[in-house]
Image: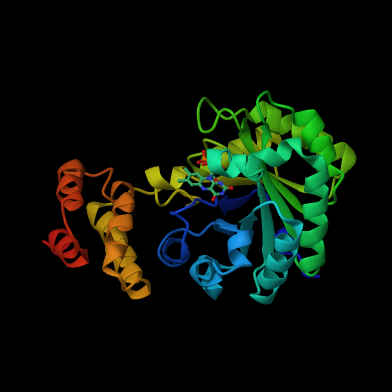
Length: 314
Ligand SMILES: Cc1cc2nc3c(=O)[nH]c(=O)nc-3n(C[C@H](O)[C@H](O)[C@H](O)COP(=O)(O)O)c2cc1C
């Protein structure tokens, strides 16, 4: 079994899975025009949708290009059989790895027993891991989770998880109840690393939460002994966040990337509805230069790609 996790530098960097953000087009932008992290994750994909009539609508979430590799498909759900079938499919699609979401705190997800609700359901976790391992017997398996449900239960949760023989864990340093509030607790992540060192030294631990630069990645790796660091929202503040050497970027750089992103988006999504979701990226690219806020305001008022392009090119 080839295991890309064992071929990464230390510390390695990962672009976090982000629903409605890290879609095919954004992953392509990051892999082509921006400093690329060592690993990229897809947005989370629901296994029940993937293995039912919802298939046609869901499968585009798992589109990727060679440039995006190594790429990990993240999945979520509750039914072991659907996990098994989805894992088979993900292996067939030639992803490099498969990640199980056990950390999403969104109400509908938790209510269905998935995401962060798994933290309180170790017997289902065991069944799901077994199903994924059986379905994708040639792929490494990782889990992305949190410190606990309401209070942090790092020792109990990670002692259990580390006994399950998983290749890598991403630990978002918050509890499910915290959602994105408060600061990520990296001391608790370090606690999980200590448990890992005793129980499963071969398992990689990726720290996640509030990291915004490569120098912070280096700092945190030393301080908390993680093997890798995952960045999510940091890329909104700085699209070049994975650059090892910080650089100043001009208005032309920012606008240039946005124009490329829009072009790729139009190529992928011919529906006129594709423009509105693009707007969430305006804040990310039209930022950090003189006059950005006025330009962004005007851009938000545009109605389609042609209008937006015209404004950006004048
Ligand atoms: C818009 C958005 C969508 C997200 N979608 C997912 C997801 O699909 N799967 C997942 O595991 N985490 C998801 N997350 C959580 C992030 O992956 C990450 O754990 C969290 O944002 C903390 O890291 P950060 O401080 O670097 O952003 C999402 C976060 C945001 C902001």
